[in-house]
Length: 265
Image 1 (cartoon, rainbow, N blue to C red):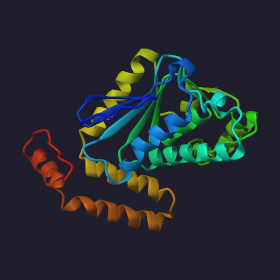
Image 2 (cartoon, one colour; image 1 turned 60 degrees about the horizontal axis):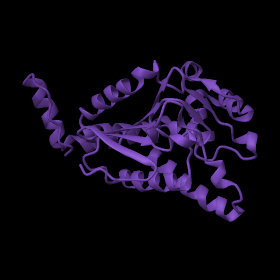
Image 3 (cartoon, helix red, strand yellow; image 1 turned 180 degrees about the vertical axis):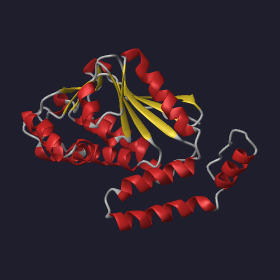
């Protein structure tokens, strides 16, 4: 596929259908500025309905210090209230687009993930972290609050009481603590983080893409429903696969004792 070119994001395709997006402002610990917000929004918004041949995405940060240190406060210095609101709307649209992506998104947190950086990781489907990574939602320490999904995604991951402690204190915590609390899926030595993330992404990418997208949608939507409604939604999502070529290919490959060749149709 033709890879898009951005100022603040580096896009690579280590395998067909698998992209690595690197937040590429290492000189400021990959802080989120307006341009990065625009570029994340531009990349992710179409993926809700038109994922094409894309099957899995890994997001990480450039360098070995930070995944993303949060909003670029130097850029924000001197902003009017209206400028702040307009910038934050860009960030909201970008983060919501990550959450709504039909394509699975893995956060490979290689260093500090603070404030908006932590929220970006939480917007992904799951998180792998370096043992040296640190997390925090520090917004209340500078007079604001999490506004990129943090007050909603964090309690769904760690529970209400733990989320209140994390958000109301603004205190940092380790990758291991994040793992113990259910926010981080896996913790790896720094050198092993990206190979582990790529391996999981490749395994996802090898599966039937419509099945993966429908299963993701069913999990995410079902969590917002009561059980009866969720079960009904699941069956509707399931029925999408019955008439697909990939469903036939999956059954045929099993019976023929060979690896399936899924086409996403």
